[in-house]
Image (cartoon, rainbow, N blue to C red; front, side):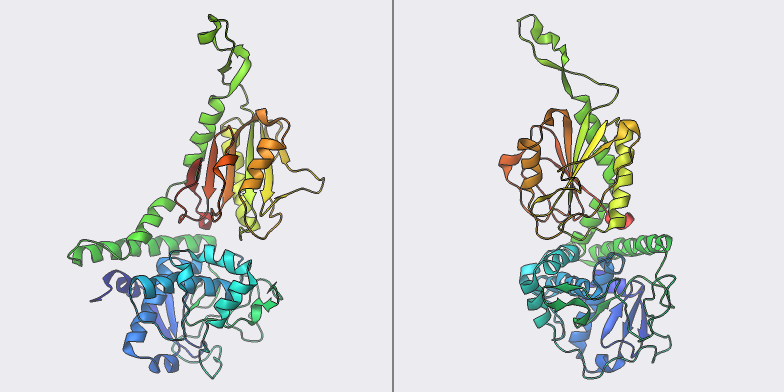
Length: 432
């Protein structure tokens, strides 16, 4: 409290639960679980660091954000994200069985995960940094006044082997690395759950997120009030929360309306120039506003449920703005064709088609191919009035591929602040 008022204040909201069901410490967003044997072997300074570590997992809502990502790799990504801040920015000492790497400084857990899950060498380097947590394996369901929650999926029986977490998929690999066999670093991130280990419902997760954000705000104000400089170590998180609270549909809808309203047509010549004998297209507003191109970046870890939710909101905006058709392409390092060998999936909204999105492809990231497809390989490109790029933003795009139509980047990661062209809005996928 004397040195890290903001983050320490977060700890006051988290119940401490002693258990030998884990090797080190863990959090589910509402509680901190601790192995007393591991805790007693650490110095007071190291414990301060690991408590701040657990608080940061909650501040950044890691227990709410895993989605369908692999549990072990996501835990590594979360630790690399927050430990880099603690060690390199805040100067906090952490136990030697923690993991940090300067190359991931100021990156989100999702961005780090995306790197690790697509790069065997980087994942192996991260795994090599993990120190053995203890000589004795944890004893599930034993110790403490409260039995350790098992992160049981809804409507599924508890894992008979007594594992703390059952990954959504087994047998996953990155190259030759078996993801289920990766040892976790100290300080595990669990799914948001109740005291009995059942995953929370969507409504309960929303309530927990609201409670966490309220506490973050109060902690930020407390630290600013007690700081001589009037600053807070939680300022970056408050800025990110402020940005994520803007509904992306409130940004995209006006963008589409503006792009379609400014549509030009030769059927009604521009009267301003007719007296000079110069015929130019005029701006017009038609019953339906033409086509919109939509690119989905499939190199990251956007889940199918997230794509389904995004599709529903994009369709709603398209109908409100009277878009005629939506053309969809999918890209990682290249644009991926559909089953019919076509680059674009075309949905005729004016005829009642329902927009369907799918996770097609996977791998690295290149932003240029969809714009090359639009500029050089689309015959009726003049019908397309706007371009929406749905991505986490971690990649680069050449200024030379900027099309002659408005572009908006719908970014799922708010650490990316600018693009060479187009407008930016942030999409909070945790609400999908």
